Length: 342
Image (cartoon, rainbow, N blue to C red; front, top):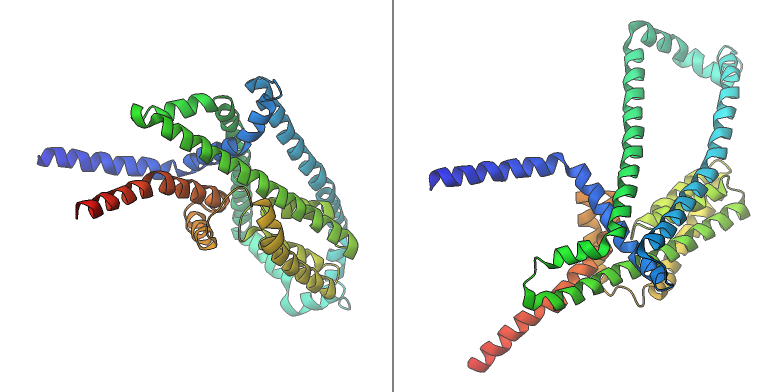
């Protein structure tokens, strides 16, 4: 018995270590499955138009690629413009550093920035830090690219094989309970898909409102900021707030009054989104208490980061359906039988 318990503890520890070491991969798999479930209603709708599942998935992926291409087309021109402007400004800044009458020259006379930077490079510390920083940045870029490719590949496989995956999962349920479990699974998938489509509509509206506002008040990069706010608005509770803060900070480059008015605009828009837009778009999708939504976002956001916050509401919805359809009826029946016997 002791030997068996020891082996069990060792296997449990090894399993926990394996899960922790592969946490990033498991998060990517979870994200891919969530995206596939969210896109499932679109695929089903296309299949109703007499498209095969493979063709429907191809249409969805082409649309996704078009969105990514549009984002790149929006981001690259302003970024390249800023890089070229920075490259042209560096010689002027260096010249102003040696001009004692300029602002940069007075800062240099007071803090001796050039001498300190030269000393750092001579000592070798700065060079090592630059190299390590470049290596870390390259690792982040490679990780982001590889993670994106993994998510796209897994999402494609999940979308194509969604019926097979669903049937395989249902085989773990007893045969007598399998029809009920299948109905519950279909309802969960439908609710999650409806929620994501409604959330996407709300996010698109937030992006359009940001684009129009930035054009109206003269905030630069209106299209990029609108796309950024639309992406951030997909995260419930905190997404639109973070996007509004980013836009307000960018508006500081125009003027302080513009930044303040932008912040007020997002406060008003957030109020309208919470009390007018979201109730209309979510009317026929999810029905969970706001407290449950907040708790789900906080808990899953803490455990899984941004991905956890993104899947918090659908997860809470699925848990609520399971409780209402499986757990609570059994409890109610047990209570009723106990009351009759007493």
